[in-house]
Image (cartoon, rainbow, N blue to C red; front, side, top):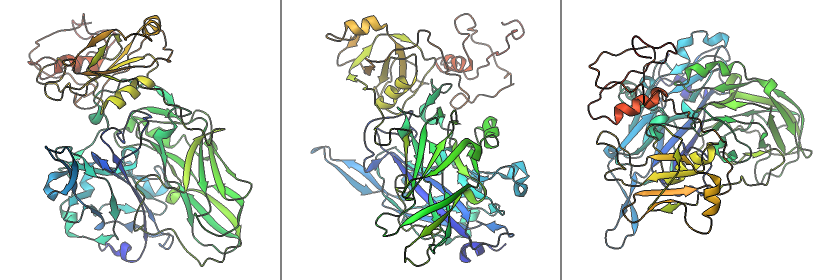
Length: 557
């Protein structure tokens, strides 16, 4: 196929959303944090869905070869005046910005058109990421082809790529999508050298990774949606579609029981009377990021039977209610069936609007989830999710029994607090604030931003309400600590910090060769993550091997 022929013929449709993470509120945060996203970010993430447009020939493949999505962005970086302390934003050279590739995937998996298991993932070698004088550009390679019914989405939490300043300085978050173009030359500069992101590289070791947590009611705001109607026509008795993505932005498994997705069938300000007469679910699946291969079976055991569709009495809203125990693995998200269509509904309308379609590239995509849909917990449409106060105290290191193993790095003190909120055994948290020297480890371990989860006897907490929580305080104490006063913890602390991602670079079923410098079987028999931590803490250690056989390994048990 000639490059960009399908783009020129209008055979492709795009849905693009950008997400910004502020210094105090990470997009990939560990849970609900009070506060609003500001106009400054540390990193900007781009989510994408590419489908075959309704005009494409149903029997022909559609190619993305050379198709380029260019963005307009200021390249402005925060600069603080040393005298006045005021912050301004100044454009910086494009060379000062770095990309991270999150990969992509072609769905639906298991369809007759994609029997080849290897072609479902779109590797970063098929994606070109560049920054020009106007803004970021993403170009697809020659092998990215959509067969009938297929569509392309991003990797982890539907992110295709992200970018930030090389020194992680604050950047302006506003970014506008321009009209797609053809850039054949960019196909020769595919991003094989761009780092492939694993989510745990951001947070280090996640002590809550093994926990299943409920979105309702306290974590409802870590879910997001871009689901909305796709009007193919607006004549009377017409047929309309619902499509998009429903996902979650955590490193946890999130239970979506009682979650309600509400979709506006009428655009804001539209003078129209619409009644939906019938709804048919076209298909539902759970998309898993490339690094979660062991969870791919979730795509096939989640379907239309796990959700029900309802229309409001006035016909203006469509609600999707998920059955009990629908869970999203870390970075997983819900998509539709063929062409990412969730449902088809028939409508009777009295509008006089001329025929339109929403299958076009938006000139100014939303910087947050689509305003045409919302998420809430069943029975609590107007109720804001409860937020348990962090009760943070600077220059304080609270006492308590550690329940985390190894080095757990959090993006902020808020994220550390949220990790404690989510862990059923935690009611005390401490966060290292020493950017220069860290908090007591060695030169090989960056312990700045280390988050430690602890548990303290409730009687001690109750006795300290009118005084101080036990611990050390003072200007030289480089910690921020907090306590969850009203939380009742589970009596037995359990460790869930088994690590399978960088910086440990773990390889399963492998025994590396090296000179043994330490055997820590007596003091450390917890998990592979703790073994890695011991190596990180030892300046002489370059390799680590953990025996996970209950019967022991050679002479070691």
